[in-house]
Length: 296
Image (cartoon, rainbow, N blue to C red):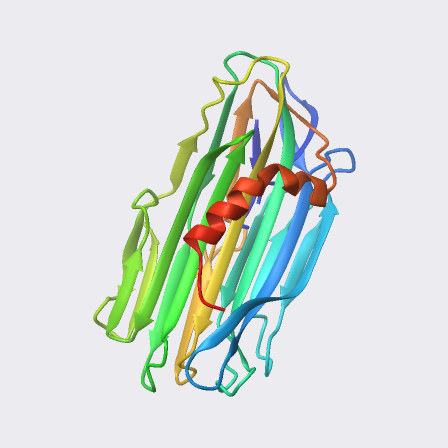
């Protein structure tokens, strides 16, 4: 069985007859897939620094089509987008830095976050759950201008299953033109696809899709457990002079190329309302705060 999420999701899941097997789809009226989306902004302090992130918009829903975006500052947006089709055939999101001049209280950065939660029942002792991240990308350009605190692009993929982290990966691209720094755990197959760390621009993207199996051996048949997929993209530019940074949790050339989950021996059942579902993932919030801490 297969279902698709884009980055920014877990897309699921009702069952319908499809030959001898069943195919998992999301977004139908009886799926019970819970979505929560959040947009934040970073504000200039007028002296080359910033404050934030500060929440500017959020919402939640169960099932259906999700399409949200936010434009910050002087316009020219959107600066952050989140999307999930009703069949979960594509789900994704991205963030880019707005161009606002850098005066005090100007928005100079954005964050997009989508959380998708589904409850499963393990029916078979040899049940399997696998996810694939086809593509992600971080890109930045700095032609000239003051360095200030520079640029920061952060992309996080998180998968939780039951009471354990199945996957947590944070990739960070930061610095200024000609002196870029890229850091991640090395688990995702990022490589430089354009420019260079010592050039005015650089882009990192996958060399190949990333595939990961989630170990369900500790769960017994009949046990119910929650799975949450979360994507968080940050793009912050304090320079604000002939510059930009963009962070994609998908292939920027293909909006439909999102994260895919495949499973056997599991039955998806309705999740609790989004707010309640997220209480199951307090640990992720703590880990995120540790790994993503930045001055306010």
